[in-house]
Length: 399
Image 1 (tube, rainbow, N blue to C red):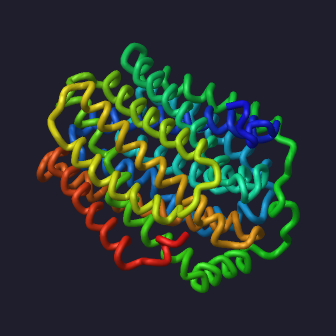
Image 2: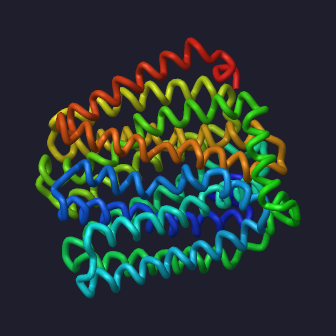
């Protein structure tokens, strides 16, 4: 890993470590929140509602977050958001400890933390581009993804184990401490960021230019449409995990923690693969292959299988999801000029912000048919999407 060019840069190493500790919180909170909602309601549909609320800010703030990432010092933005996430987790831990948490309280907390993470994502990825440059962006983002997945692995296992033994308040305090470490590494960053130095354009004009760029850049618009479709049909599998852990595996918090850890392992493998590929050619063709793999792996996960087979299927699904993220991020970064890269990542956040529709769809379908048939149906739909993109969107194949 040390021989990878991006990792020789001190700021990149600090960003990598900070992202890892940030993502331990994101993964861990999904374990705790998913189980809390399922315990409150015994309903996968309500888990879908919770995750829809979690990702709703990614859609609502998509344009704003990209404009903010272009307007402000990304380094300072990362620090401020990280501190707010840690404080929010500590407050929620206290609420849980005082036994004040009802379903609506969980939903409100979910909305707040989702909003903060929607602002964090484009700033983090654009800052990585500032450090490594366009020629190393795929390997740089792949390595950053690896660090994030490592954090997710630790966070999921820690949250599941701590919640099972000591309860939700202790789990959130552990996750908050991880965000404190992330803040420590972000405070060590020295590069301000090329496009983030000074931008005095009024925010309204900044956002108007963002919308005009999206309308004029047909390639970027096409990437948004495909990414949103994959997000709705593929990434919504997380909605089914609390039910699978509770009713199929009968393992509760530990089982859900292991499932989210398997997600992290799959993402780590995908991140490593893309990192060591270096300057990947024909990203669009690779992305189409990932869509097909995503659909097939969801159909595999739908089968009623024992623990190890289920964890393996989750890892494969997550690997396809991670590869999809890395490829779409890199393609969107390369589709715009340097000064608009924050907004390009805002477009990506907007695209993944369609996740609420997917979580609602998966929750409702699982409530009607069961989680297995719902996963199978979405997997089959992804295969159809992959076929349509391969045939009808030749420009994507040429990227």
